[in-house]
Image 1 (cartoon, one colour):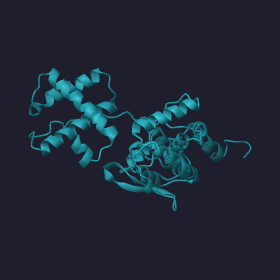
Image 2: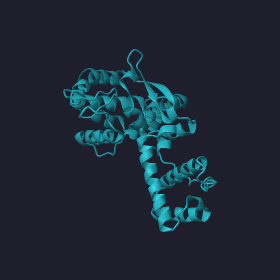
Image 3: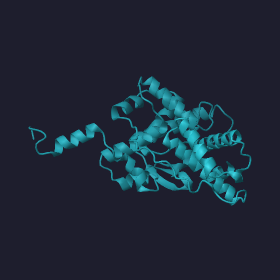
Image 4: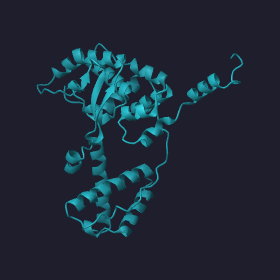
Length: 293
């Protein structure tokens, strides 16, 4: 776990999943009376996979667990604890291609109106919501933002992404106004509640750095206040950012750069468009779609 955290710069979210996956694997080894990591062979792996599928786990979860164990054995191999990696030739299951879930503009408008901007927490929540939607950054990138990462002079934030890859992401006037209000008022009041200083951008009610779990709880409460019957999480705002950008005419390469995707194929999952958008394009473009044209 230290190797993942320090050398691979894995997010707390990834660390938690990998630790759970390794616990599941060790439980399986105990059940099968396998006491030495060097003794695992293809037959054992097939039994392990069968157990996973019997638990009705999704392909995505199984794929993640296999990736975890492949990385785990790669580490053991590097440390000369095992002679080879039995997971290296195990193919990952093909993932179902799902269209990413996103929010419609009307839903977003309701969310943007629920925070009480006269309170420190309301200002923080508004700044958080505006920034996530304005930039499409990951939750792990957001919780690790520092005050100095914001450059108001050119309207950008400095983001450290997966694998310590750095990028600059622009933000607009709505996010700027929300951030300025939070930094000059709400954040200062929240910091008064603790004697420990921090330069992290987002802090909790006790003035301590906000966690990714805290972020999810904030979004859940905003949805509840807005009386929306939707499931929202930080990554959904990332999906929404990408979808809205592409629907408004942004090119794929630009969105790839803004999201910090290494491969264009990762960004291509966002090339779906809403039915309303398709209909509008059709009605405005087809010569015989509208009699009034």
